Image (cartoon, rainbow, N blue to C red; front, top):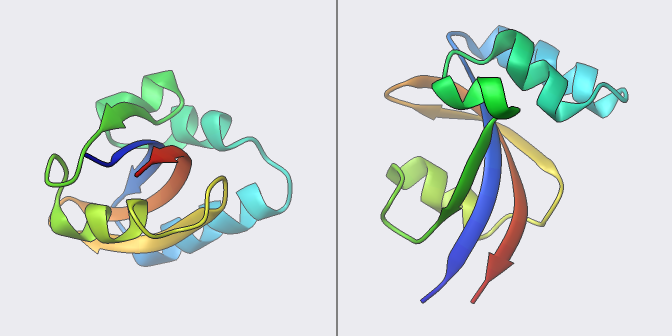
Length: 93
């Protein structure tokens, strides 16, 4: 079964999500941004979600995590929790 390791940042607005993505694209460390801004408890560990398989996260997450290129910031991705930036750090098929 496929597995992925990813990290994310959760915020309330698409606008803030885009601003944070610009910071990361400009060279700010993803983990530092997660620690400062993410509303998810995983923010304290730089947004690290650990390893998980398909169906363990919400559908919108799965669609990105199991198809996006590795180590590229994806998003904003809207879920019922808010807006996410996602970075897939590893994946096995």
